[in-house]
Every structure is written in structure tokens, then in C-alpha cells.
Amino acid sequence: MIICLTGPTGVGKTKLSIMLAHKYNAIIIGADATQVYQELDIGSAKIKEEEKEGVPHFLIDIKSPKESYTVYDYQKDLRDLLAKYKNQNIIITGGTGLYITAGLYDYKFSERYNNDYSSYTNEELYAMCKEIDENIDIHLNNRRRLENYLNKKDKKIVEPKLLYDNVIFIGLTTDRDILYKRINERVEEMFQEGLVEEVKDLYQKYPTSRILHSAIGYKEIIAYLENKISLDAAKELIKKNSRHYAKRQYTWFNNKMHIQFFQTNFNDFNKTYEEVIKYIEKETNC
Picture 1 (cartoon, rainbow, N blue to C red):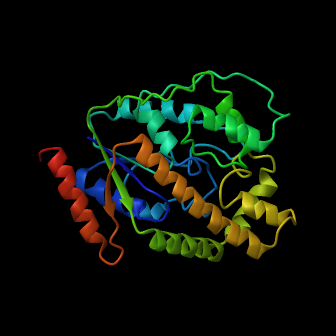
Picture 2: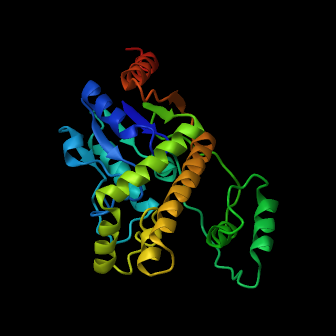
């Protein structure tokens, strides 16, 4: 049995994954594009060693920040693990929807053109993308994503097929106001735990690291270290970017996967756990 546990940041995925792992004697495989990197601990909300409670974890802390790790790499690594541990129960948990889709579905990497769009404005690029897909979810100011989308050779939207017949998709969710409040509180906790010091140390060691300059919680602090913004501005930007990321996560989950969502009961998490167990046993006829 493969349990895919996902949802936006801050809804309790880590806690539930450990509880389910104990229940089903399962291993856990991460699905987080930042947590694959060593030393990026506080900013990625990486599970602490004591929180693992002895449960084997994979695809966490596998790469140096100076190395590159792509969705193609994740696809291969995940499928290798699924083959290796095919006789065990497996929990895949994380919020990087593209990783999950690429690993579990017949996800093809499109060929790309290499057209030069430098003479086009963002508005023109956005309009070109909208002509291809009216519902495209790319922000007008995200020029890199707009150009990447236009350079895909095959823009036809084809729903990929699930490659594994024993997958149960579970999502945790909560009301938007509660989620945003939890995200803001989590950012405050990260600062208290030493996020600035973590980023400062990593930036000194790996000044050209791609992940440091792109991951939420790291790129904003680097902007502060480079005297581009104040520390308070960096903190507020992390909160804002995290909230926007959560919104994009929901869009991906709802459009790319067939997930059964459960409302997280933060006052009595055992109730959430019991609801999920009941659903799993129903789906597996246990």
C-alpha cells in the first residue's frame, strides 16, 4: 500500500505521517523540493531527528546545497525506492505537487524550443500563454515561467495516468484564515529558532547555490543580508510568499490529483487521525 499524504504547508502532514507510519509499519519518503537539501533545516521546516520516532525516512537530506536536484532526479529516485520497498507499506508525504505527480504518474518531460522572447513585454507573453490555455496559473510578473511555458514543444494538456494501482491519496486542509494564521506563526517560530543565522551561514558557504536563491525563507533573508531590504521586510515577505505558495499548492492538488481532503482538527488531532484511518480501511477493505 502506498499512502500519499499531501496538503499545503502548516496543516499537520509531518505529525500525521508519523502516526500512520506506526499504524501500518511503513517507511516515509519525502516529497519536498527544499528538504532534499542538507543543512536547509529551519527554513524548510524539516522534520527533526527526534520527531522521526525511529521511522525510516528517505529523500530528505540527500544533496548538498551546492548540488542541483531536479524533478527528473526525484522521479527516478522515488520510483527506485517504490520498487525496492514494494513489499512494504510506504507513505509519501510533502507539499511539492510536481514531485508527487512526476513520480507516481506517467509524467512526461516535454521537449522545449529555445525561442528568444526578450523583445516581448510581460503583458504580451501573458497574452500569448492565455491563448494556449485560458486558465493558466502563471502570474503576469513571473517572466521566467511565462517564457518556459511558451518554450514547451507540446502544450497540449494531457492528464497523466497513475502508474501504481495501490495508491491512496490523502490531503489535509483547513480554513484559509486558520491556515494563514498558522503560516504567519510558523515564520515567527523560524526566526526564533535561528533562521537568519542559518541562512547567513549557508550563504557564506554556498554563495552561488541555486536553492538558496530560490527557496522561500532563504531568498528573502539573502536579500536582507545583501542590504536590499530590512529584516522586518524580509520576515513579512516570507509570510506573504508562503501564503501565496499555499494557494498554488491547492491549485496543483485540485487540478492534478484525485485527493480525499480532511479538515485538520488542531484542537484534537486524534480525531483527524481516526477519520483518515477509517477512510484508508474503507479503501483497502480492511
